[in-house]
Amino acid sequence: MTPLAGKVVLVTGAGTGLGAAICLAAARAGADIAACYHGSRPGALSVKRRVAEEGRRAVTLKADIGKPREAKAVVQRALSAMGRIDVVVNNAAIVRWAPFLDFRVSDWDETLAVNLRGAFLCAQEAARAMVARHIKGRIINISSIGGILAHDRLCAYDAAKGGMAMLTRCAALELAPHGITVNEIAPGAIEVDRTRREFEGPGMARRWKKIIPVGEWGQPEDIARAVLFLASDDAHYITGQTFVVDGGQSIRLSQP
Image: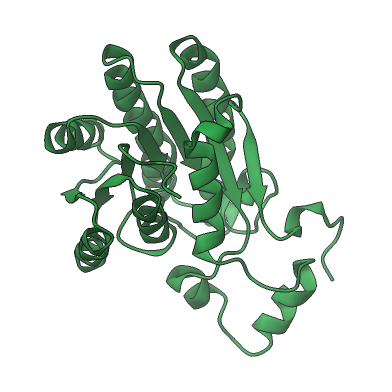
């Protein structure tokens, strides 16, 4: 099955974790890949090699999407290299931990610049290209249950993800007449290098099993499968929606 055959997928934050898994899943589904990365060049090059092994084209593009000029430029570079963009996956994000009373303005600004403004700029620039080329494209924002439920010491991250939900709806409303859908996926606890570092320690695995109703962390491939669905023609009538992929974590009234 190659539901994305002939499509070009641009993924930000593509060098590690969710981004890498999304790139590989899209390639297996028939897509060519524009892999945008910032600090994970070895990971991006590995993604490029593995995409090529699937028989698909791939290009790696370095950019700091927290900077407006670079966010717009990376979309144009992807267009130049690949000829078109059919799907944008806004996955790039940073995390800054600190108590609310001690949270620094510089960390707040950096977090919102990458996690929210960067997603807006990449989506806007790609949507302009889709409209100009009459492409009925897909924009998929990778959010978090932190945009729905609050975390301790993550005020900027959660605020950005909450803003992404409304960005998704506003963009979906205005782009619908052009045949472009915009949706977001809100992952819960997904096992990647960053979360393993943040939540390591004795008893942590047992604690997560109690918090998550299905009894285990999610895997990057769980998010990648949701992306493939929203990028496919099967989801052509779905727009402006938040898909929570969290093993039921967000439905529990209280944590054990």
